[in-house]
Image (cartoon, rainbow, N blue to C red; front, side, top):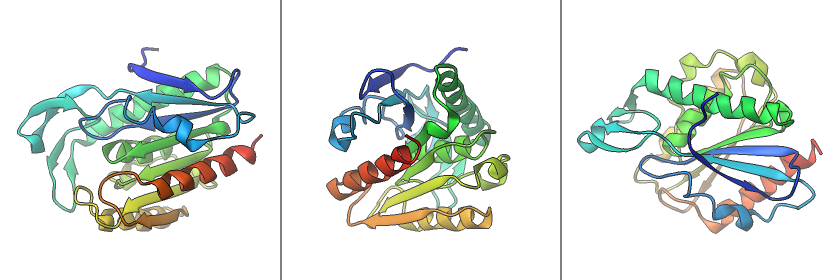
Length: 222
């Protein structure tokens, strides 16, 4: 197994839970590492955070400029035309991280996926095409690009999903976050939706909500 380069942070020795967190377009796995202590998760939960780095590739909407990207984006219109083959490859790479965590002794039900912006689109695909139940899916300032390609929805009927979006998001309009909620419902899944008075970013209230949500997910399995 050849994993993508990544950062790893553990909140305690011998973790019982894992979070695989995907960054946005042009960013890196380093971006969300400083967030871990801000979540203030209880030490007894023992969480391993994994922050993969996306490969560098040309991005059409940025004039073909090479940057860290989970997949190519052809048009930044409301339908977000993307390279679906690349998003499937990225989701498969996330699956490799999940399988590695299972090999390290973490049950799939204790593994949570999180993604911001472009990383969130990959997290949707990765979670809903994985053949074992997961702990949860956190989708931040993102959109659901591939509902028609998610072939393991039956395995994720009990998946806890939290969607968070900025009301003034100038990169990924909030309408796409709400459209994702509708797509999930059409697949027979339920999700919690929260919006915040912010742009394409994270805010303090949101981080507190993530902390509470993760703590509830993991405490239920502890």
